[in-house]
Length: 271
Image (cartoon, rainbow, N blue to C red; front, side):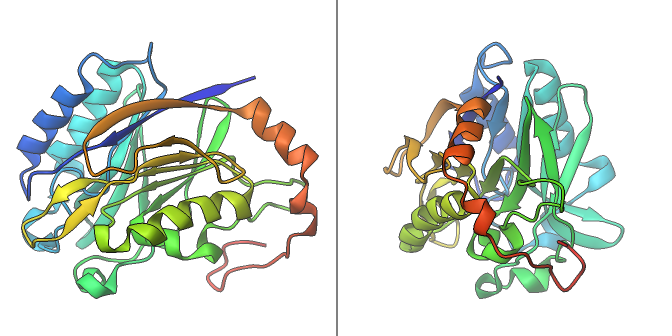
């Protein structure tokens, strides 16, 4: 059965300086490649920090140097590299999670829930589609930061002939230190209620607005127990493994999915 080796990259970010952040991340990753990991996960807006200067900082998607850098890293390292980027596409601005594969192809997810307390809903457009990618036999639902607070959007919504829609949930974030407790609890809650592992990567340090970030990046199993957890506000790079065989065994032994409520979302997502 498949094992998914996942590398969490918890780092401090240079404010609105994509070139410096890409150089820093390349140095941080060192010689890490497909011999060591299958998936490298960077924080939300890893190139700029959580900027609301979308008109100045968002890169045109088709010409984005940061997206090209992600593609180059994935190709050179022989593994998937992912993180979110501020982009402009068809006249709109998005906080877009980019899933870069070693073959150069991309899958993207636009953040659905925009953090209105920072005015994100006024500076970026809302995403409308849930996105699931596949890697090493795992189906992975993509999400960004504030999405984590909304269980209906992230809830398993399998079709009538299957038990599970996805096997892991990924969330990249710039989640502030004053709200670190909800971040940690919600990562575990989403794992428990969806019977799936959760990959959560947050940044550390302080941004130009004086907001501090505590990190607390975690790899959580389907029981909500941490496989990787570093509850300190320091940069780190750690790799952990998820087992599809262990996940399926747990789901069979604890079939809570049999008692789940069926539902659909107003915009047509679900069944």
